[in-house]
Structures are given as C-alpha cells and as structure tokens.
Length: 275
DNA sequence: TTTATAACCTGAACGC
DNA sequence: TGCGTTCAGGTTATAA
Image (cartoon, rainbow, N blue to C red; front, side, top):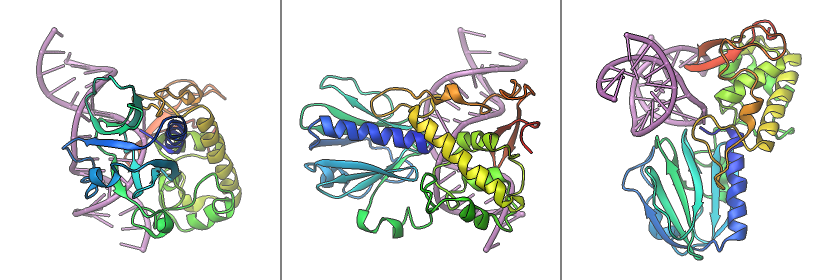
C-alpha cells in the first residue's frame, strides 16, 4: 500500500487526532495473530496508561512518541489507522485497538499483515535496527541531491527503476512513484543506474521531489485500500500519468503506455517520451 | 558483493 | 454462478 506520501498523510492525520482528542491510552486490545513479526514484548502492558505525544515519520515508518516507551509502526502493504466512536463494530483484520480517555478508539487494521510494530529509541534512531541502513529522505535537499544520487549510482548494473526503489539509495519511493518519477524525468526505467549522467540525476531528483510533494498535497494515492487516519481517501490517483495505464495513451505524446516487470514489480513507461 | 527471486498473507479481479 | 489463477502499494531471506 503505502509509499512515502501515504505514510506522511497517515502521520498528519494521527497528529490531528492527537491534538483534538484526549490521547491517553486507557486500554489496549490486540489480535492474537502476529503481523509480519511477533508483537513487541509486553506491548499491551507497556503502553497502557501512556499518553500519545506525537507521531513522526522516517522513511515509511511511523514513530509514536508517548509518555511511556515509544514505538514504531510500518504499514506494510495494507496497513491503515482509523478513529472510531464509542460504539462501533470491529472489522475483519482490526489488529490493534487503542482505547482513548474520551471513549474513542484508535484502530490499526491490516488485511495482509505485512505491517509490524516494534519498540524504538527515538534518541538513537539512526543507529537502530530498522534505520541504520536507510538512505536519505527524498525531500531533504542537503542529503539527497544530484551529486549524492550520481555517486550512489556509479558501477550499478541494476535498472534505474529498481535502483530508486532501493531504500538504501533513497527512502520512500515505492512502485507507483518510481514509475511516475521516471516518466516525469524522461528516463527509461530499464536504463542501468550506472549509465545515468549527472544531468539525468539532477532531473531525477527534481522529479522524485515533485511527484512526492504533489502526492502529499493530494493526500496520497488510493488504489485499493489506502485510507488516511481520518478515513479519507487520497486523490493523487487522478494525477497518475503512467502507473496502471498499460495500453492507454501517453498524456504527452499519445503513444501507448508500456508495461513490463522489473525487479519483480510492474513498471509502466512511455517508450517515446522516456529514453 | 551484487543482483534476482521467493516468501510472507489476504482479497479483488479476471478468465473459463 | 463457481472455481482456479493472477496480481497487488513493502521488505527480508535466500539463491545465484
């Protein structure tokens, strides 16, 4: 499901909830099923009674800061959060319920259970298990720019599509936005990363930023099951140029959009606009 | 070391 | 209608 814009949208939604609700966690109910990994040790007991202070994002991870221990949540492919009133009927695949002081409940739902939770030490985030190998944030011009991308791509034999989806290179670019950013930059997804010029990298960095920023503004992309914490769907889908449009006309030159599998993932491009 | 593939899990969409 | 197959936004483990 979620790439960086979707996670950012969920993050903003959760913070809005924290500001408007009384975010003390009075009760915790979690499903017996494990998600991608087992639940963190003592999860229910340790966060019960804590107050939610803030949610932030690093890469595709949500970081929950509380008055007790802090924890992270990765949404996997189908994870999402929603806020329910006092009376509600739980839905299939609701895996975590945080009962708040004001009677409302914050719920994590995840159909495919590819998401997961873990404890996190926010003071030593960048050296911790989940974060030590991560590349720069794409919207941070200091750590992610044409120079860093060009250097990282030297001698790489993988396709540029697979390369920009590598979280060690840059975080947050998933399958949809990789195709979209390459379309904007006019670069063929199958081009080898090592063949990128400095100019290509400049254009690619700009395109990645542009596509992610616009998607955040639009509240992410709703393909099948993405919803923000407030329950609203994203609108970026209406702005997609090539993703999921195999056989349709290129919005620029009208040539039919092509599709192929790269790195095991569907990839879409225009063979006339992208070289 | 780098790159490719399979696996995790569920449900929607599609073809027959 | 019903059944079987394929595919899906992420990440990791294993194989090549």
